[in-house]
Length: 101
Image 1: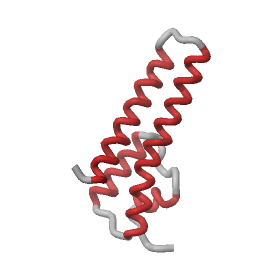
Image 2 (image 1 turned 30 degrees about the vertical axis):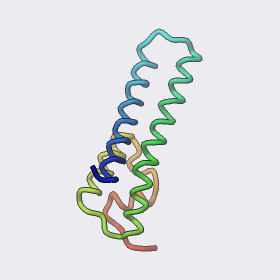
Image 3 (image 1 turned 90 degrees about the vertical axis):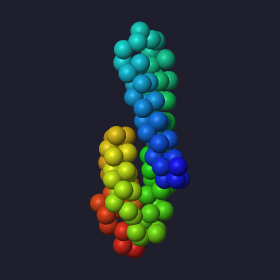
Image 4 (image 1 turned 120 degrees about the vertical axis):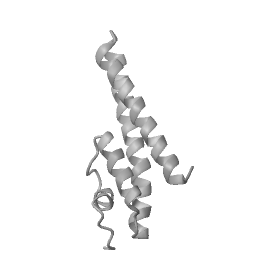
């Protein structure tokens, strides 16, 4: 498994964990304190997933030559995380614009 595949897989697992926690928060009979802690964990997992994608997107941006697979992978990841255009670098990579600024 390549580094990119590992990052993508890790980010997908983080997103899935966040979805499970979010479901638990909304369906399980829990206290307000526990719901707040779960919400905080969901936010943390989404932030971590975004960092996984953003780190590689930044590298691709600097390299200036993303493969179509890399662009598709990060579009899917960011869409799943609800972070479609969260950073200009990531957005540029996802849109295929890799010219240096």
